[in-house]
Image 1 (cartoon, helix red, strand yellow):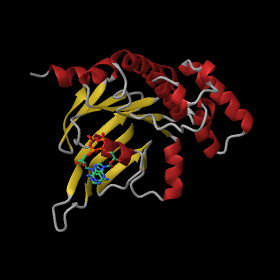
Image 2: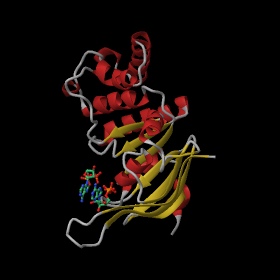
Image 3: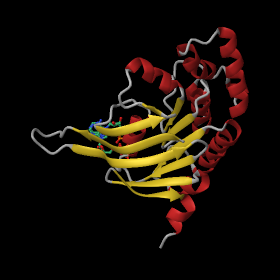
Image 4: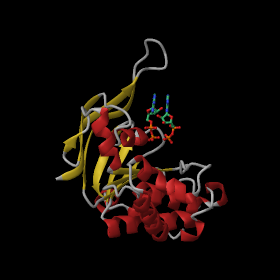
Length: 237
Ligand code: ADP
Ligand code: ADP
């Protein structure tokens, strides 16, 4: 069974002009992401990638179609249940989205506090995550004392805090130089291999897909115009 399954999903926004045609950000998308996949979604800016990720994370409702996560349909789920689903999904961002007034430790602890973990549990889990991302010596630092690569490693640790099954990465390396990009991608590969976390990685960069993804969907104008194994999709004439 697929971990994430989209069936004929459409998301449209009202036109910015009175009486204008709606903006169809995601147009009749069907795709299946299997547990354990590193699934790339590639396309130009405006293709609908970010919208698709917000729909999977249930941050916005679909206009039509259904989305299942872990076999449960999220499209009609009440907010209270969606909160449980979101604990199973971690997310990382291009601009890291860290709390600049909190230390590295406090940033990583935050989702555990929201989930109601005990102080002892939080300390143990954060220590484990700091070691995993190689930032044990930065626990007391603040985000603006860190490099871009270090900030994204904090972002990854925070996203993993509640042990999600799925990690959504939205242009997570787009603000980083090529060398740092490779380091972050290597870390994401370890997240996939060692923890069995399924990763969905959105990018406009082919290099990122080729260095990490096993499956890929190519988006254009809100539609998935091609999908399958990375090798098959990019070797076709
Ligand atoms: P991508 O992530 O591939 O760059 P987006 O999902 O951000 O694409 O955007 C797809 C299209 O939907 C774009 O035309 C964008 O302007 C539009 N769009 C995205 N979010 C909104 C929104 N909240 N309101 C109106 N239009 C939106
Ligand atoms: P990206 O495409 O790189 O994700 P954008 O600058 O397109 O970034 O979008 C950033 C935010 O602005 C998103 O949360 C998106 O929903 C919103 N957004 C994008 N396009 C529009 C739009 N045309 N109208 C309103 N909000 C939008």
